[in-house]
Picture (spheres, rainbow, N blue to C red):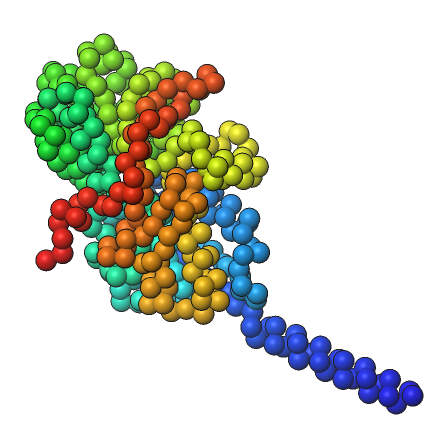
Amino acid sequence: MRHTSIRGRLLVGAALAMTLTATAASAQTIKIGLILSYTGFLAQAGDSIDKAVALYVKTHAADLPPGVKIELIRRDDTSDAPDVGKRLAQELVTREHVQLLAGVVSSPIAAAIAPLTAEAKIPFVIMNAAGTAIPRISPYVVRFSFTLWQEGYPMGQWAAKQGWKRGYTATSDYIPGHDAEDAFTKGFTDGGGTMIGTVRFPPAGTDFAPYIQRIKDAKPDTVFVFLPGGKQTTSFMKTWTDAGMNATGIKLVSTQDLVTDDELPNMGEAPLGIVSAGNYSVAAKRPQNDAFLAAWRKEYGDKVIANYMSVAGYDGMNAIYAMIKETKGKFDGDQAMAFFKNYKDANSPRGPIAIDPATRDIVQNIYIRKVEKQNGEMANVEFDTIPQVKDPWKELNPPK
């Protein structure tokens, strides 16, 4: 009996050892290089995305296949240095051996990183950078944010429909600003309007008074403004108000970047009545948005406000997790991209989204919103929806 008992314990021990060995062998860590602007003039945007990514990872750990875990390796691209972003991406690929790159606020930085992804065959999940042409640089780029043409073009069309005839653009002097300017101009002139002038701001500048005076002197019916979201926008709105522009009758319209949900509370009543085109608002009444905001507020409290960048980061991670589940964590760059190119999600906080397999850009609703007071606070209230918008620039400029 005693001999049998010892033998049984040995067999159980051997089985347990084999199980532990098999578990260890099957355990897998998927490394994701998260490049964001943690310092510099885009740090507020970088923080919004980082918080969304962290929230998703924390609340969806159980969704991963057995034995698979995620490791986020964060790097700071300092906001305005494409060479820094390129170097960080190289280090993440060659030293850290990441399987995915993600994040990136700035379009010039994303454009500098994109060629490396083609060389290394590493998927690059963009969570903000909106420069229209970036996915054409590399077949390993997929974008879950937006393009400025998706917002600027319909905004131009809407402005022309109001009967405004004389338009003016005021945009930041870098890739997204140029895209926004071109998109609004195309939409406005297609609708019968005429552009009478344009100004471009230094990307990190805050002295807007001379530019606003030029707009005031030109007396357009409407001025379209693009600035990267953050403190810059509050500075612009203060200068706009101090210059007496609200009494001129000039109608200010914009992309969602000028009136981000998290910056609105800092602007007082200056943005009241501004109409913008965007893909998301915290004021939107959708069950999936309510669920997202409940999770956000539970994690970060009421004083940290989500915005469209947060949702892009959240949706980007949702797609990454879906790809990992589909492949059981065993994928190469081509397999991951094959999944992303056919990705759809009917339950994003911003409404239904999909990736256009021909362009690897997002297809999504664009909402026309107006800044109104709700419960004593400023809010971007959606009042019109343009359903499932592809990037207009790519449709107007097919590959040669």
